[in-house]
Length: 332
Image 1: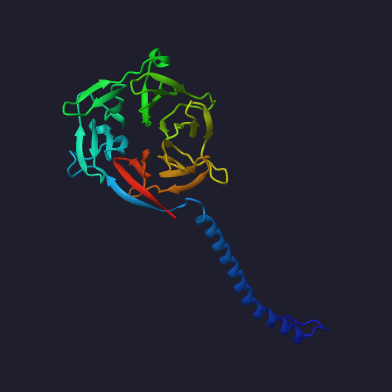
Image 2 (image 1 turned 30 degrees about the vertical axis):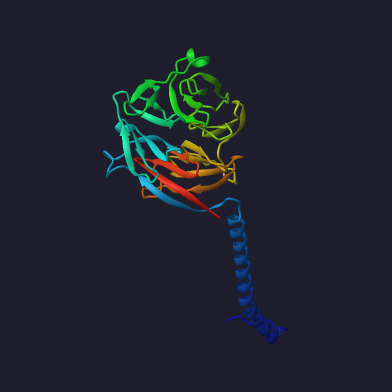
């Protein structure tokens, strides 16, 4: 048994113990209030960020079936025509280009012996389609009128006329200039509507492996993605490098695992990462702003996102496996 040393006032000691017992609940209350205030301030700071996406709404999932002649099979590229309000999908595995209306209802499909493996499609202001056919190793110019006409789209002049040319993904601007990745020579070729090469875009970084995707904004700035190098490059409308970034969070941790596609809107740069199963959203300075989606098989999730497109109304089209998911960010 513990004994009390002589000279100690046990009455005073008991009173101090009682006072501490009374003060303990008050300390707990103050601590909880401080934690609540910190949480409130932190959440206010996050949701007050400009243009922060409070929610992402899934508008549609296009996967074929129904009126489609079979389900989509390995779609590789798509394009939304703002004039006709039509969606065009390069359905590689079925060797066709499929069209839907503005509500993503099936309209028609284009098949031909000349179309072997379409991996990309765009449409110019004259209503002609440009498709990259990986089976043929060339670009095709398609007149999809009553009598469909398909011809090779040859690039003329400059370096393209002398070098072997292996086309990859393509983009098109408002002046019908075509931006096509030359996979063999690790560059982007810019050509006018007739195929005359205007310039070549490339970089000489030590860690540069080659471009895998390309987009162009309304000001003529070119955005390109190096998948293996895990880096985004931005060039001005003369082909000069403006900036580059490799995707890191605020702590400096690398975000990209296997980025396969990018798209741009007025405020943001979107990057689809196939292995991460998400869309990283950066501001125009390359700073991570937020993310969209998570890895999974259900609607609204991403199992293997491989292609991105953002239309004029900032709807986000994502090719994910054998489906196209369409999203819209609801901003505060």
